[in-house]
Amino acid sequence: MNRLNSFTSSSEEGVKLHRIHPAVRIVTDFAGVLLFLFILIFVIILPQYSYDMNATILDKIDRAKRVHEPQLLLVGDSNLVFGVDSEKLEKELGMNVVNMGLHAGLGNGFLLKMAEFYAEPGDTVVVSLVRYNYGPETSNEELTWITLENHFKLYRFIEPGDYYRMFKAFPSYLRDAITLWISGKGNIKEETGYSRSYFNEFGDSEFTRPDPINYFEDSEGIPELTDEFVEYFNDLCRELNEKGIKVVVAGFPIYVCDTTPDKEEFAAFEQELREKLDCEVISDFTEYYMDKELFWDSKFHLNDRGVPVRTELLINDIRTWMLNRV
Image (cartoon, rainbow, N blue to C red; front, side, top):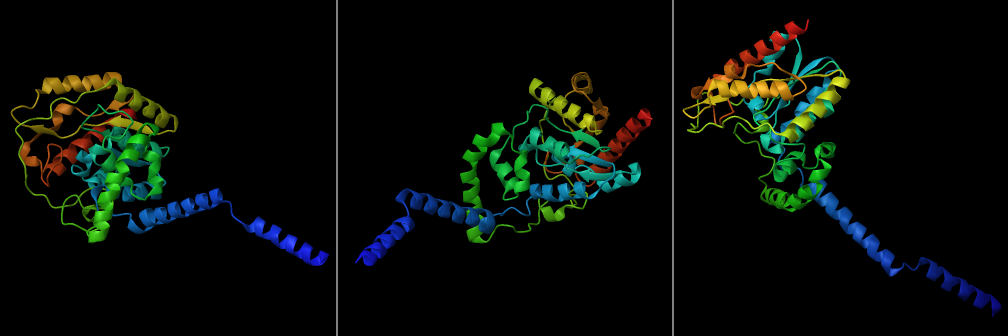
């Protein structure tokens, strides 16, 4: 009897040891649900925008990381994407070129991180922006999600100040992504100038755009240069300069119409940049006044006739700056 009682007692203790506390079961079940949702969303459903223009960020980063010698990094918004012949720049200047331009809606902080994260000692960063009134935070959270998707290496582009807004924007982005996944319309190569499939190895759009498809009556006016941008940009310049990376600012295409500001006003803006930014401004902005027939679908995107004109201006600006530094 003692042996039987001993056996029974031991068995009961074993059962107790293997009995899972309800709270632990809830936690493990919840963790399992989270893991399932993570795999479903970030492995099975995403990405859905692999051929969107901003997906080219992956190709631009890969090109920048492949070359381990001094490069010319063109950093800015889509005025670079639809406005530069990087191959010609490379041939004329004798430097490897990467067009890092992306959608302006990501915000200047996001765009400039392309230089912060991927420029290396000896590189030259040429910044060309159409707006100077953003700080480090992103401007359009849903557009940012479309760019990031499930590419976790890009998540470091998000500033702490953006975390809450990005969290709030995620459900809307995910809803659209799920809709594309269910309908089978995601990750499709579209025949548009904003498709990743029309970008070349340098990061330029090669989509054929012979003529303007829009004309505009109003100019964008003179960009606003805010103190927030100046502080952020100058901190970045100092950080890059300490690493042996040179930073300069170049002009952008200026759409000429009846309401375009006088050249004197743009000259004054250029002078303000020279006085407030801790880097050289290499362009005469008034030389970038361009006829409306040279633009494509916006006041900053050039067509096939405008790209060579702007590229030549940029080559001359960079070459002159390089010669003056010798």
